[in-house]
Amino acid sequence: MFGPIIAKPGTSRKNKTGSWRTGAKPKFLQKDCIACRLCLILCPEGCIEGTQKNSFHCDYDYCKGCGICALICPKRDIEMISEEK
Amino acid sequence: MSDSIKKTLFASGHTACAGCGQSLAARLVLEVCGPNTIIANNTGCLEVFSTKYPESAWCVPWIHSLFENSAAVASGIEAALKFLGKKQNINVICQAGDGGTGDIGMQALSGMWERGHDILSICYDNEAYENTGIQRSGLTPYDASTTTSPAGAQSFGNPRPKKPVPEIANAHGIVYVAIASVGYPQDLQKKVKKALSLKGPKYLQIHVPCPLGWGHATELTYQIARLAVQAGLYPLIEYENGELVSSFKITPKPVEEYLKLQRRFRHVLNNSEEIARIQETANKNIKKYNLVVKNN
Ligand SMILES: Cc1ncc(C[n+]2csc(CCOP(=O)(O)OP(=O)(O)O)c2C)c(N)n1
Ligand code: SF4
Ligand code: SF4
Ligand SMILES: [Mg+2]
Image 1 (cartoon, each protein chain N blue to C red):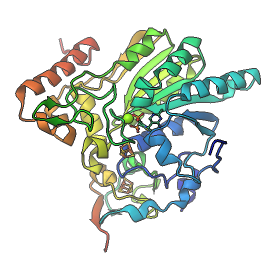
Image 2: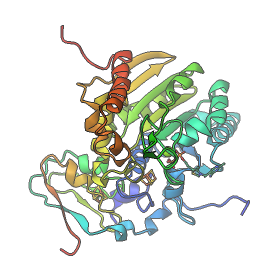
Image 3: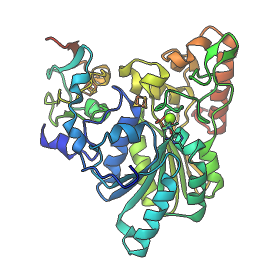
């Protein structure tokens, strides 16, 4: 392979990296959220969205379960729960 | 998948490890750069996890060629855009890990800085050659255990201090040199914006914790990045034309608070002499960059 190889923009979205989670996933309680946006800013997968208070949630197709969002939430409004639930 | 997730310029589905600081930083950088950006990328984790063939996480033009040459590739892109009269509205970026920047890529980078190209070079500093299995680089900090500087009966890990790439960049007389951290996303994005507003060569080094290589829990990426700054080990500073124009003020925390969360420093935790050496590095930074506000 010595020639240029070209891939289409944003096609990584085909990879459903959510299957990588090893037991825990975040649960967005949507009770005490103050819409500080910290979880959205800090998710390495860029898979959290929301605008208003108590509207934030993630796309489990991509969430790798790192736990950053749950640890950073100042209102403890995101909880890591076991995958089965 | 909803529209807002679809709109990010650095797409989900990349294959970085869970909690990877570099993948987070790449998205934060690209948010500021916007769509009118062309990126050349050295080999390394970022290149590998963002472009698992035949897919790509990038939603801007992005080129990978070799481990050592993104600065040369970017130089060519910039020159071509200038020739076509299109440089005005397009950001050109070359980016790499710490190995790709400070070791193997240094020659191309030095040439690019010296020739005065209007390019922002970004170093995602995870302090080792992570993609090939955590070998030490010139930017690995003192005492960090890596696979090529393993701690053991004969060694406390990496025996050398961190290579001062920002100072090397400054020696080229370039317009802007700054250090940022994923632990301070707002400061990071402000620095990207500032860099892009200036014409000429710019260098931005971003501290990006690597859960795999540093041996820390995936959820601690943000906290660990902040502790490095708060300890004085990773000063967030900014130079314009060689003059220090800002330094992020801290209330210093002992270095142990940063070290104790990472497996790569586990062997020094009970060794007061080694801790004192690391603390000395922090103290030197605090003094040199005036990191502490003095009341009175
Ligand atoms: C000329 C050459 N030598 C070695 C390699 C193997 N290699 C690929 S990525 C890498 C490490 C990259 O380290 P760094 O630049 O710090 O980026 P990181 O993976 O840590 O983000 C190495 C040694 C290569 N691709 N090309
Ligand atoms: S657990 Fe990690 S990957 Fe999943 S939504 Fe939270 S921050 Fe994102
Ligand atoms: S090895 Fe480190 S830098 Fe590479 S993808 Fe994993 S966490 Fe990120
Ligand atoms: Mg590296």
